[in-house]
Every structure is written in structure tokens, then in C-alpha cells.
Length: 562
Image 1 (cartoon, rainbow, N blue to C red):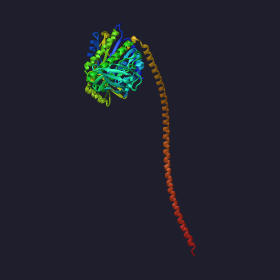
Image 2 (cartoon, rainbow, N blue to C red):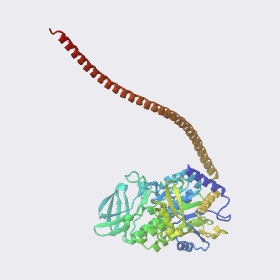
Image 3 (spheres, one colour):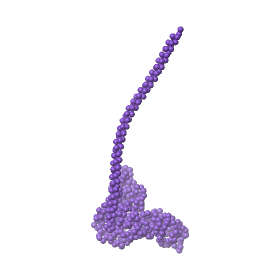
Image 4 (tube, one colour):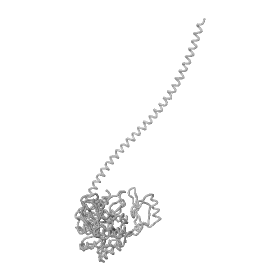
């Protein structure tokens, strides 16, 4: 109930603040595009501006807010729950809640989300159920059953292996220096040349298999090595062309080896050239997803989650990080250019909530749940002693039932630096203090823009009334329970009084029993004494009788003598 009340309060705040926008803009405003780019640096933003061939842009700092986690920040933007400590991100598709992994979509009230953000195009947001939204896509939604997983296979020339997910044999033949891959059950052939390395792309229409749902899957292969007897090929993975987009958006065709299909297990088996090919294929596919969605959307505000800067950082151990980041910048700039060509008066915002600048330099007592948040275990005295010895830590202690959390509000101690907001045109923040922008203000701005173009206040008020109705029902239930508790307390009081009376009677009876027992004891003693007296008297009588008998006998005997 508290969660519902919190969200209702957020709705009310949003509605009342619609007349006080954070950003200023002219009447020529067309659309708003916000791209959430975790890991983007100031150099990356400047390079994107160069590629866009514009100087009409600005950059504002974003003060980090704990916990310092990219997924939780996005969750906070969507739900208003900026300070979240009971949800620990497991990966981009799942979250640990009360120690159990749950899909992100289960952690958000989808009806509330649709009512709040129903007029915003939500692209690649892990918390969204696209079937419950008018204009959204989430490739992670039910991805397990719509995914052909990546693999590396060594296949003998003119031999075959079984592709279990597609329920087909995969044969390899060599003709005129070309490697041909045959998917027998689908009568499909793909060709690879030694120079091109990558095959053509084909559509596989799956009707019924063991491993994936029916649908259209686009596949291609990369040639890793070739000799006279064996061919080594790499399949980069793909997802189905539909099933993870809202119905109005249709489908996205082409091989889609998106970021979450990157598997650590094959990275060591791919050389730098092949791994770079995979990264480029994945980035290009994601760019196609964004362009397709934006071109079909009938909404005016778009929120996009773009994770490729963080992926580039993860792959920096095997590839040149600068080169990968340059590829991401080029892709972002191409996407923005295409969008701006269709919507020349659009406002563009690129957002990164914080920078990773190093390793944590503190280690307070407790279990580290996520950057900036520790579960306090043990004695609080130890924690206070640590804080006083280190000094300079801005922190918060939070009680959550029986648990306590230590929250670090000094980001640099956690190896975290300020984030940034890139915006173009520069007039977007005219007259505003651009020293820092808060996440809550940005969420309010997005909400305001959504209602400005396609009003949904009526929906929100209906939802607010519904929540109030639910709360009223709960309050009535609480009143009934309180009345029942009062009745039970009265019954308990009566029972206690009766018990007290019973205890008093019991005490009286116990006293009387003691008196009776004492009298019984005395009676038994008297009886025993009587037994003794009786026994003693009987013996005396016997002796007397015997004596008398003896005397009488002698007297009679003496008289009878002559």
C-alpha cells in the first residue's frame, strides 16, 4: 500500500508541476529525443557534436545520486523511486529482490507505467512490457524463447552438424573457393568468400522447433578459418523480428545480434578481427532497431536506452577501447542525423548519470550491495568508529525494518564522478542554471513534454481516482479490522476478569484443602495413638485375665483336696 501511495503522490506532484517546466523552449518545438547513454564521456559528447557539424549545443553536469548503478537510475527515472535499496541489479534483464531473481518487467506496475508514460516512446527499456504499451520495444522481453544463441562450430568439409534450436542439419561444402553453408530442413544456402569473411543474410521462417518460438529469424555467418578438411564458422546470434515490439511498430528485419547476446565464453576464441566484426554487427543492428522504431512512431517524445559505451568498456580488454567508442559515437551521430532530418526542430538530449573514475577508496563495515550502498551488519558502534576515523564522508543511515543501510553520498569515494547532459540546440536551457540537473527534474520535464503533445491528464486523473478508491477500500477494511480488534480486546478483558475470579476461588479452595489436609493429618495421628492405646489395653486385659484364671484355678484345686 505504501508503494501505491508513493506513486500516487508522484502523479499528483507531476500534475501540479506541469506549469513550471525545467527547460525553456520556443513555439517551434517539434519533438524531443532523449538518449540514455551510460558511460558517455565529455570527449564522446564533443565528438558527436563534431560529427553532427554543430556548435549549437551545451553540456550540463549531472550530480550523481546513490546507488550509483545505471539500470537503477533508469528505473528511478521511470518510477520516481530514485532511492532504491531493496532491488539489486542482477543483469540488464533481471534484478535480485529479496534474494530471488525476477525479470525487471515484474518490478514495475505496467498499468501505472503505461498511464504515466503512455505518450512517450520507450525504446529498449528493460522494465517495459511492450504488449502493454502503445509505442515501446524491449528486446529483453521473453528473450529466452526468441533467441538463437551465438556459437562457434568446426565442421568438416562436405560434412554436417545438427543445429538443435532450428531442428536442422548444417552442412558445409566448398565450391570455387566459396564456402557454402546449407540449412537442409529449410532449403537455404549461405555463401562466404575468403575475402569478405561474412556470409549473406537470409530469413529463416520457423514454424515449430525445440528451442525457439515460431517466427522469422535472420541469420548470417562469419568465417573464422578454413583449410582443406575443416571450416570454422561463427554465428553471432539473433532474435526474432517480432514479439518484443508494441503492435503498431510491426517488426524489425535483419540479423539482430544485440548486446545481451555477447557471451564471455566465446570472446577468448575469437580473434580481434572477428570480435570487432561482431561488435560492429551488433551496433549496426541496434541502430536499425532505433531508426525503424523512430520512423514508425506517432509520438513526439522518445526515451532510448543505449548501452554500447558500457559494452565497449567491457570489451576493452580484447579490443582498442578508443576505436570502439569512436564506432559508438559514429552510430549515435548517424541516428541523430536521420531523426533530425525528419524532425528539424527536434530537441536532442544525451544523458549519462555518472562517470566511473576509479575504485572505491572506502570500506565501511557491512556487505556492499551495489556502488554506494552497504547493508550494515554487526555493531553500529564499529561503523561510527570507522566514520570518525576516516572523516569527510557524507552519508545516510537508513532503517528498513530490521535491516540498516549505509548510503554513501560522497560519490568520489565510490570511484564515481559527475555525469553529464548534452543538449542541442543550446536554447533548450536558456536562462537556466546549467551547473547541475537533477534526475527528478528531468523526469518531470519528460512527463510535461508528453502531456504537452498528447494530453493524458485525464488518464492520470482516472488512475489517481482509482488509486484513491483502492485506498478508501483499504481504509474501510482497516476500520473494520480495528473494530474487530476492539471487540477482541473487550472479550480478552472479560476473559482476564473471569480468569482473575477463577484464580481467587482457586486460592480459597487451595487454602481450605490445606486446612482439611492438616485436620486429616491430625485425625490420622489420633487414630494411630488410639491403635496404640487399644493394642496396649488389650494386652493388659489378656495378662489380667490370664492372672485371674490362674488364681481361680488354684483356689478350686485347693478346695478339692481331702
